[in-house]
Image (cartoon, rainbow, N blue to C red; front, side):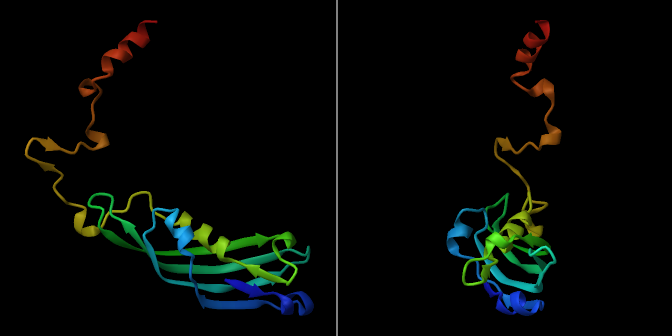
Length: 155
């Protein structure tokens, strides 16, 4: 999203932004996000006294992520507050600023560590001759490498 900064530079006004955002597919492919829907940014850019700029606002939307258990598409709603200081060197000679990178970084921060759809939270994770063991269920006595641990303690 490219912002024209001419009014901001000459008159010192605030530029208000209230737009839908499109993130390039090249960036999305490099992440665990499958798709982004309804991404919207509402905020403003201000010129500060020290000739830097301040981007403030809220970005919100829906991430389509793989469910950690079933790998099915999982919709995750997110909202992120942005307060970013932008140096004069980020602005090109045409006095425009592309804020896509800043918005993308804030979207990446919102990716949850564990994405599990509500319908899969109580899913049975066992079958004929197998079961998934959670980390808190693992005991050191069942660990096949526990005998190696004793060797290290002797030395």
